[in-house]
Each structure stands twice: as structure tokens, then as C-alpha cells.
Amino acid sequence: MKKIFFAIVKRLPSNSLRVFFYRFFLGYKIGSNVKIGKCVINAKKVEIGNNVLIRGNNNISCNILKIDNGVSIHSGNKIIGSANFTIGKKSRIINDHFIDLYNNVTIGENTWLAGKNSQIWTHGSIHTKLDKDLTVFIGNNVYVASNVSIAPGVKIGNVNLIGLGSVVTKNYLETNSIIAGNPAKVVKNNIDWRKEW
Image 1: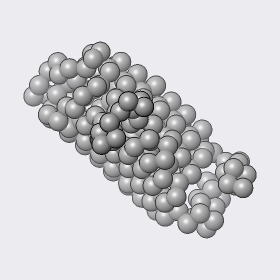
Image 2: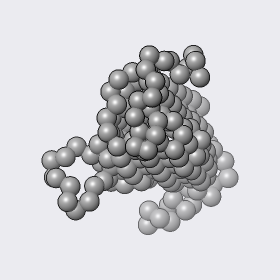
Image 3: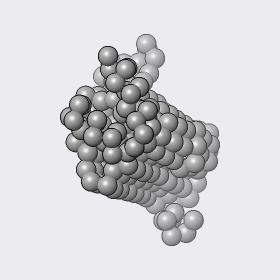
Image 4: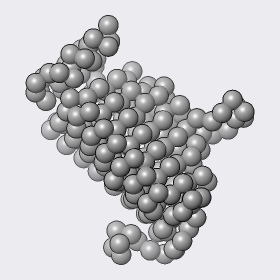
């Protein structure tokens, strides 16, 4: 039945109708000036702030979805799994990214998942220890370039730049750094990418 509902919502001709259907039929909390394109948003609990843009051709399917004010999610993204997804104020996800929600993923404020084709993974293999923390946390004012892979359990601190094509397999809790390579490492410290890049 839900598949039919989402198929109908996805084909509704206007943003106002889509927002109404999500609010009225599913009880989603959606703020003002929210634009939702022809996409699927399927979660048990949804909180979307004000001035949010979610373009078409996205598939967002999770347990709890929290999108703060001023967030933009462009087209072709897959954010799917049974856990929770949180994204902070004025952050952006551009096109064709994949976020695996076997465990929770949190993205801070003013952070960009830029370009295309980055992947965030949260699940391990059958050999993973049951008590291992596989959640992924990306801090505030982080720029993640195209084609970046982030491994399960990774935490990234504030005001960092993750270079094009990097494979991030461990935590980087420092700030004001450029992190790049395969495997990724800190290549420059004490730099604010927002001012110098």
C-alpha cells in the first residue's frame, strides 16, 4: 500500500500538493517555504525545517529523518537504510551521492557533500564485532569533494576539506585541515578552506 502511496505522491503535479500529502497522510513535520520535487521520502518520523529544497529523483528511506533550516538536497541521491539521518542548517548534498543507513549518519551545519558520486557507508561484514560503532559523523563547515568514500565508523571534525576521490577509513577529529588521498591522510594543517580555497 505504501508503494502505491509514494508512487502517487511522486507524480503529483505541484510542490504544494506533495507537501500537503506528506503532512496530512503521513504526519511529517514540514516547515515553511519547503520545496519537494518528484521524489520519495519514506521514514517513520520526519522533521523538515524552513527554507528547505529537496529536488526530484531522490530516494530517502530511513527510520528518523531530520533536515534543519536552509538545507538543499539536489537530484539523484540515495539515502537509504533502517537507521537515522540528520543534516544541519544550510548544508548541501549535490547530485548522485549514496548514503548507507545501516547505522546513523549525522552531517553538521554548513557542510557540503559536493560534486557527484560520493559514498558514505555504515555497515560492516559478518565478521564485524557487535559492539563496534559504525555510525558516521561529519562536522560543521566540512567540504566533501566528488567521488569520496567514507568508511563505517568514521568521524570528521569541523572546518575540514576532503579532497577529490579520497578514501577515508579512520577518524580525523582535527580542524582546519585538508584531508586527501587513498587512503586519506592530512596533507595540510591550519588552513580554513572557506577563505583560502
